[in-house]
Structures are given as C-alpha cells and as structure tokens.
Length: 163
Image 1 (cartoon, one colour):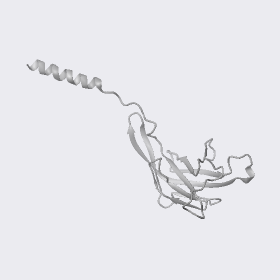
Image 2 (cartoon, one colour):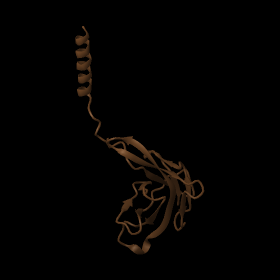
Image 3 (tube, one colour):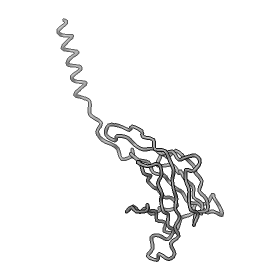
Image 4 (cartoon, helix red, strand yellow):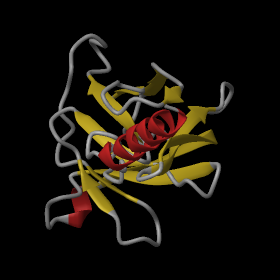
C-alpha cells in the first residue's frame, strides 16, 4: 500500500510539473519604459485643446525626432539620468526654417525601477521633482502645469502646456 501511495504522489508531481508552461512572452501592452505625455491647450482658454502647428521634438545631439499627434506629444525620458532636455520646435516639420520657434523643455525626475516579469525584466517609472519637475525657456510656451508627477501610466496626461 505504501508503494502505491509513493507512486501516486510521484506521478501526480510529474504531471503537474510537465503541464506548466514558462511565461517567456512579454506582452506589447506592458511597456518597459514609461514616457511623459504632454497635452497642449490654448493660453486664452485653458479648457480648450489646441493643436500645435507642425510641432517637432528632438534631443540635442541625438537622431531622435518625434512629431506631435493632434494636441498630444509623447516623449521618452532617459533611464540612466535624472534629467532629459527636449527641444520643442513649432513649424519644425516644414522646409522653411525661418519661421521655426524653439522652446527648450527640461524634465527633472527620479527613476524608479519596477520588476515586471522574467520575460519583460524591469520597467522604469519616473517621478517628477516637486519643485522643478518641468522647466522651459518660454519662447512660445506660456505656462506648464504638472497634472500627474508620477509617470507610471502611458494612458494618462502628465503635463498640460499652454501656448
């Protein structure tokens, strides 16, 4: 009777072990690095969304350029630093550089690493500094309002830009 019980436990354990699958797939909806989301509004009516005219964002010295989609702009932040500076250029997508208006926006933040899974590894969340989380040169941007300083959800608006 003892031998039957041993074989039953051994067989059950083996079946449970072989029926398990490794979770080695990182789903696309689980981003490993968050990005800051800016939304643009009219400075005369802060409740009215406004599309910036041919807005182009780039980092100095890098070959990264991102265009705004409608009144939103999604910008990645550097994981290996506590600050990222983006140049936001109105009329930046046209060939006439004489009408370009540039504004420099600097994000100051803390990086918080969060374990996702074996397949995905860690993801970086960002927390904007409470005193100087976002600064700008105010060339065409009138004001910046931090809506959500915790950059952990890519579907939220983090920064409200008035121009």
